[in-house]
View 1 (cartoon, rainbow, N blue to C red):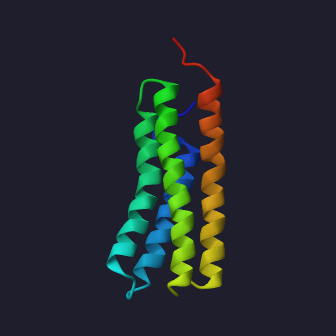
View 2: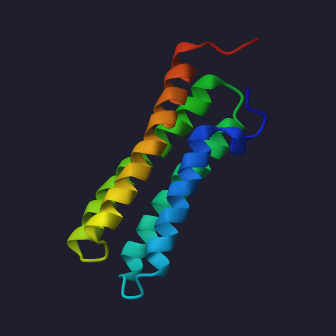
Length: 122
């Protein structure tokens, strides 16, 4: 059982995705500022909501935060697509980021499923 949110695979993968997005943003100097902010905010949100939910008292509350994290992950998927359309990403960048999104989505979904199907301990 995790004692800190950083021990969660879901958070670790979200952090890796956040770092990958920041790496792309740093090496793309012409990126639209509003787009850049939206993209990095979405990446931050996946990590932050996972961490914040971990600190909640019930599985139900934690699950609610993981649902927000999952929504932010879907936003990242869309922003990756848009970044490709805008010419900010190569096909290889898109493939790498899509792979990282899947790596993040899987443990997040498993944790969410666990929380929904296991009542809180009293």
